[in-house]
Length: 360
Ligand code: UDP
Image (cartoon, rainbow, N blue to C red; front, side, top):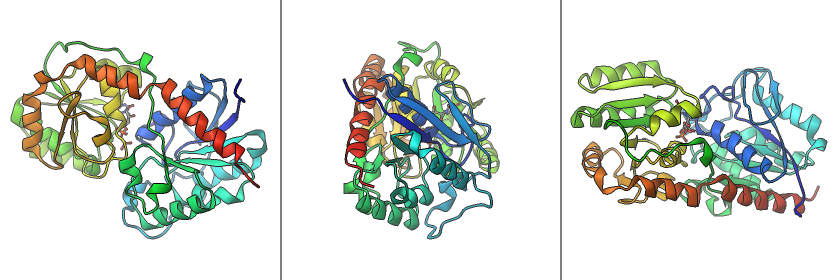
């Protein structure tokens, strides 16, 4: 029988868990907790005040939100607000570390990486984004040299964006398949787009595709940039765009399942793209730009189509070929590659190595 671990998860400091500000990492953290709890481990979560989860015990921490990495592209300095929630979360972690076997960090930030060798418990890091800033990239390199195997990413494509990418663990991802209903045929043809509404996610290309094909486009997600969102309405007046809001996973999957395809049109190197596997779980094919982790998820011609980044003509052509895709194959790919069981085994092995090899 495997040893059962006590694990402390530290959430993203950019916003409350459940708010959507953290993007895919919010679901990733909760799914990782579920995957490890199903294997008998104990998990507690530390997250900014206002966070909610029904997965396990959560300790809220006060303080000012951290600046999101998306606004720090290319920046070569560390920014921390006064009374930073990130700083406060790690002060709390330092106080309680003895109650745990391992700490699991979900912040894409310099500070937790820097702190790794100062704690007397091993710290595992989940890096949910591709390399964006030289200062984080350099700290990733220093940390993996001091603490080998301490840092994981989702995909090889994401690892390759870091200067020491070959030292990073490639961990994939898992979702709770039981939370998603398979839909063999949607009632009406329509397109879906899921994500934070922010320029790096490229919603305008999906809007242009909707306008050109005449198909309605349902948009799900938090509006992070109101001016950008308004500009899209102005630029594509004939596109039938329905904004559905930021929905719970349960509501999202119900509506997403009714789509003919999910469009994923990121203008950055997408580290993974949670929305893609959530679409597969509902039987929805994914038409995506050939970007980062999405190239490892979408099987061209089988579970969707990969087109060149920025090619709206490619998106339109792919929409016209959707009848080539068997929706059941999408669900089957999800079950085979992204179940919580498979992911939980991988995470457990990783933690076992970190805990066993840890030297104070
Ligand atoms: N999401 C959600 N409700 C919505 C729209 C999106 O819960 O109405 C979640 C979605 O389930 C996914 C995340 O937002 O987990 C978006 O993650 P992704 O990795 O696709 O992009 P990121 O925002 O991390 O860049």
